[in-house]
Image (cartoon, rainbow over the protein chains, first blue to last red):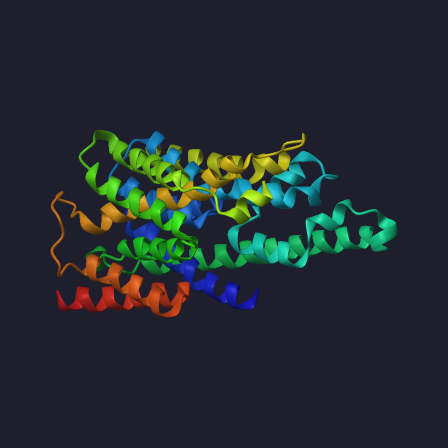
Amino acid sequence: MVPATIAMVAWGMVTGVAMVQSGLSTWQALGMTLMVYAGSAQLTSLPLFAAAAPLPIIWASALIVNLRFVLYGVAVRPFFRQFSWPRRLLYGFGNVDVLTGDFLRRFDPARLDQPALLTEDTGGFLQRAIAYFEAAALTIWSVWTASSITGILLAQWIPASWGLDFVGTLALIALLMPMMTSRAEFICVVVAGITAVLCAWMPLKLGILVAMIAGVAAAMMKPLSAEEQDSE
Amino acid sequence: MSDAMIWIGLIGMMAMTLLTRSGIVVWPGPIRLPLRLQRALRFAPMAAIAAVIVPSVVWTPEATLVSLSDPRLISALACLLGWWQSRQMSVCLSAGIVVYAVAMLMR
């Protein structure tokens, strides 16, 4: 968790600088950090805000970039079954990329369904899991928010002529690279990227939506590996 | 874009975060996502990110192709090289930022 936290400081600052340099006011950038709390969706929206894209396109992009969280939510939700919905809403809101993988490596959800007799401490396991999740989620939120705000404040002193809004795009490239874990993901990214360039002439930034659909469709055409078929 | 429009945009984006991150955790019933849907959910974010960044690297604001000496193109390539060499996000991002800064200064 510690190296991930240090990386997040740099990440939050880059996002803070990019938000302001892309044309958001200080208050809007603060609002975005606190309300949206999704770095990749924030960074993706910046070129769209700068180009005055229609709001539905901006919302659709944020939704699509965030879709991976649905999978993370499915993975962690068994731990929170006993809580009220407002509390589950908060747990969900805090369930960001850096947390889910780390949490699931430490706490296997399969253990929740084993009879207490076999594991001896199912209750203790659940409590430790929830305590860890809360502490980690709060730490990540604090570090991310503090470093974003630092970036936002620093950006006040940087002239727009330095072109630092582009740093947001560089950060997105760095986020994208580790997502490409196999050939299907690579095809998805290449097809979406090329389609977006070819469809840039479309009005209302619709080319971006066309490109997203093309990328996913191209990746889905690749048949499942034998391993994936077994897990179905 | 007017300030009010930007704020409405931000509120909508917050709704998207809550929907995707909290929606499935709040939902009370059992959930089974078919494998094909799971794959689509995994592919969609990277398609969206690629669809936004690739045009912003290769098209100028005046809608012409960037020149090969454009700081944006060079620094994006530096990111790819940094990732290819190290397989680390931090190296990938730092390489891009350093090359971008140098290219902007030499412009």
